[in-house]
Length: 151
Image 1 (spheres, rainbow, N blue to C red):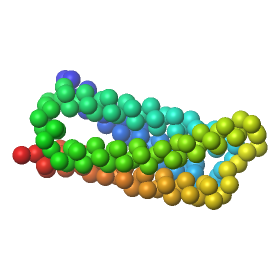
Image 2: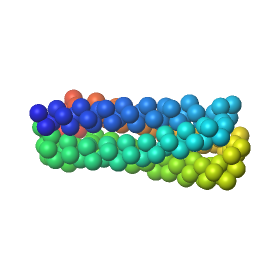
Image 3: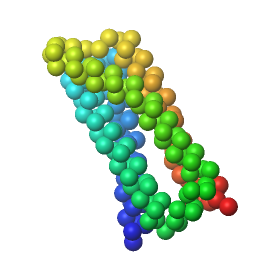
């Protein structure tokens, strides 16, 4: 039962992360940018951070207490590829987070603040890269679920 509960929570968090990334990308358009959008981006980015931490905790609980046991994961190169993809997504997400925090600070000082179009476009490209790398995570998960990499 523990394995089932951890799997359910793990999957729900991953879907939450995907939803937050999609929402941030949808908001990160020059035509949609407004002071309200800057505030929303800050909220979504905070939720993204909480979900990212939660997925780490639950994921490693699955490794330790899940039905497959640590041996399945620790010696599986596909598991480490999945962890590496997650780490790369985390590293890519630093720039958008810092930029959004800077925008929020400016928006607090100036209620009419709207980021420059070139900044929005550059950040959107970074977020697109982040989403593309994020897509590798469920690919690696599906491979692991089918025993790829386990010997």
